[in-house]
Structures are given as structure tokens and as C-alpha cells.
Length: 119
Image 1 (tube, rainbow, N blue to C red):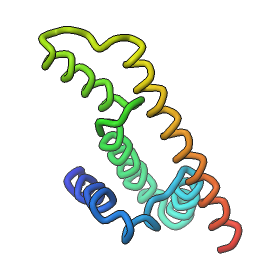
Image 2 (image 1 turned 60 degrees about the vertical axis):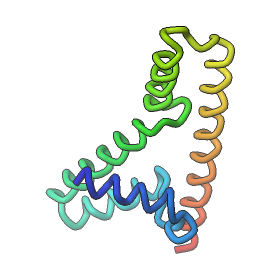
Image 3 (image 1 turned 45 degrees about the vertical axis):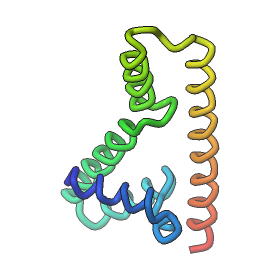
């Protein structure tokens, strides 16, 4: 299942124009989860597992403000012979990543809300 999630993530990254409509925010995920629970309560566990695997894979991506971003900074530190990245630079990188993720989250919530209300 993890292999499928990574493959799907690669499709989103390298073929975003074709897959952008398949990306869902929290509202759509809850709506799908509610539908799964109505139809098959046992399927809800599988759905929850898939959501958790997706979150784990995304969390490890080398994006600022995620665990993968911190791992990337540790790799940069190791490549610099143990010399830490200046605190203000690290904070600026993580803050910009947080704002990017926050903006993406708001955009997905708005899109999901519009889709839910219109469909």
C-alpha cells in the first residue's frame, strides 16, 4: 500500500496538471470517510489506514515545516561538517514553509467547501 501511495505522490508532483483535481483537503477526506462509514464500517479502518500512510509519506517530504524539512536541514548540517545552519536562516526557511502549507490548506478547504456545496 505504501508503494502505491508513493507512486500516486510521484504522479501528483510530475504530472500535476492532470492530477490536481484528485488532491483533496480535510473537508473532502471527512466527506469520503463518512460515506465509507455509511456503506461499510470495516472499510473505514482501511480508509483510515490509507489516510495515515498518505500523511506519513507527505510528512517525510523535504518541505520546510514538515519532518522531512528538518531531516534535510540535518543533512545540510552533516554536509557542512557539523556546522549548524544559522538560526535565523533556519527559522526563515521553516516559517516560509509553514506559510506555504497554511495557504495550501486554506485553498484546499475553500475548494472542498465549494465542491461540497455545489455537488
